[in-house]
Every structure is written in C-alpha cells, then in structure tokens.
Image (tube, rainbow over all chains, first blue to last red):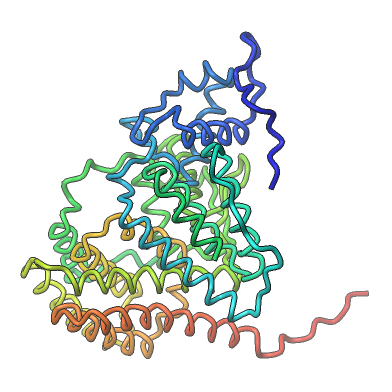
Length: 180
Length: 253
C-alpha cells in the first residue's frame, strides 16, 4: 500500500496550531517510534508532542489513546505515555504469539479456500523501519481478506509492531514468515 | 442485578489473585474502578450488546462528575467492550458472527499455548497447584447448582485462568488473552446454562490434572477444546435464536 507521505518533511512551521488531527498525529508518532526517535521504554510527554506537531493537548491525548489501542505505547495516569519495551513484550513470547497466529491464519485460509494472487516479496535493504512495517501490514491485510479473518490479521499487525519496537533486528523473521 | 457473589467464589478469586501476585499493584484509579464496574455489568448480562451506556446515568450512580466516567468509557473502548458514541456516551459492542468466530479461535490458540507452558514449567509453586485443584472442585460444585449465578461461575473460572497464566509465566500472552476474553465475555451470560457449565467444569478439571502432571500435549489439547467448545455453544445458540421463523409482521398500510 503506497503511503502518501512525502519524504521526511515532518516539522511543522512554528505558529501553526490545532491543524494536525489525532489520527495524523498518532500515525506520525508511530513512525517516529519504529524509526527510533522514541526508543523502547522511552517516555513521551504531551509537551514534546505538542511542540513537534503543533496540535492541541486534546489531540495528543486522543492520539495516545489510539496508539495505546494499537499497542505501541502504554499510558498510565501516574507515569504518562511510555513506548512498550522488552519487559512488557518479551521477544520470546511475542514470537510465540506470532507463530501461533500465523499458523491459524493458514488454517483459516485453507478452511475458506482463500486464494492469494500475488507472491509477497519484501525489500529490506535501505528501507526504513516504518516502511517495512507498512509493507508487512499490507501483506497481512491481503491475507486477512483471503482468509476472511480480519481479527487474526489485526492481532498479527500488533505483534509485528511489537517486534519492530522491541526486537527490530529480528523483523526479517516476520517478513520471512509472510513470504511463505 | 446479580451483583451478589457466593462468599466462596469471591474468596477463591482473592486467593488466586494473591498467589499470582496481582494484589500488590497500585489501587485502581476512579476511572479504572468505574470501568471495572461497567465491565462486570456487561459480563454478567445486565448490560446487553447494543445497549446504550449514558455518561450521566453512570455518573449519578457513582455520584461523580462526567469526567471520570468519560475516561472509564475510553478505557473500555480501548479494550473493545464498548464503542464510543460521540458526546452521548457509549454502546455495548455488538460482535458479528465473524468477529466472534475469529476471537474464539485466537483465544483457543493462546490458551492452548498457556496451558502447554504451564504443564511444561520446570518449577511450580505447590500452593498454586493446590489452589487449582480447589478451584476446579469449587467450579464443579457451583456447576451442580441449577440456579447458581453466572457471576459466581465466571469469577471462579477467572481465578483458575489467572493461576494457569501464573504457572505459564508468560505475562505478555496472559495479558493478550485476558483482553480478548474480556471482549467475548459479553456472550457468556447467554451460553452458561447448567448443562454446559457441568460439561465445562469437567473439562477444566481434566485440564488442571494434565497441567499438574506435566502432560503438555494433553494440556494444550484440553485448553484449545475448552475455548472451541465455547465457540460451538455460542454458534449453536445463535442458530437457535434465528431458526424459529419470526412471527410475520403485517405490512402497515
């Protein structure tokens, strides 16, 4: 799925406020997280987000809510927003979940006689983490449609996101399992 | 409203929480407390799928402002129990047959994984094994009472799940399956009829035995079966409620 985002220009002109929608802020924040601007376990303050995106505090909270729903961060009343880390998402468990769900998706595909038209092939070298994640998600969407199992794919996308945050060096295992 | 619990069901749950080390956590915030109350109402069948939950009504019940209620509904929306409905409040989420099918199949795999890990764990706290045996015995007792409350049964079941998750030592998977379980729990009240409760209690007992005796494959299979059996029951119910031809409505002139 092609992203419309033009390359790299993410800083807003100073003084422009209240323009970025929570959805956009959440999407951009997620890219920043997987591309390493906010590392696993890092705290994200409302203030930092407001400064970067020039949006309102209400939009930030809504964006945090969306990101928490996707599993990228955890928000607590006391400690604010934090990127998930290896303690919250130990790679061994994340991969165990991924393997089970991958197997299940294959079963569902068979059960519903789903057909996939395109061979999936990912390009890895020189591609940013956010782009690699987006490519994996696109492949998952396609599989989900063929297997009529949106929920499994959604959870796999969450798991893939976790891998990209806590063990990016192992993301090729995710890609390999989707290329099969 | 069935908010009364048998003291033994509640005591077992408290014991499970303590053994699993879940009570040292920070006390819930006000929104968290309100969210838990609403979740229970949904799980025990007092709020039905599609029902509106009005901010004002809940705020009045707790004698608080609408702020914490809104926050509670946000938490429940994140967890997929309700769907936020603009400024008005929220609706209890309605699961489509397809969503239900997907959710149960995922849960079956995750629970099978947990049961397998629990059976395979190297060192196991004998106190947890003892509590598990007590838990399935209590579950069987509750299942044998024809008009036992759904809340009691679910409470004990939750306690057993917590203990198995603890043995498995896989918190990430446990949190994931607990979250998925919360999503489908709205269906329990309708499928927890006495017959199924007895059958299900017997399978839980076999599962605990398999876990206690380190029979990994059997534990996995029973764990998966337990969840898939629930799915079969939900689907059977759905067919039953669709099957009888609804009385034909006369077109109004």
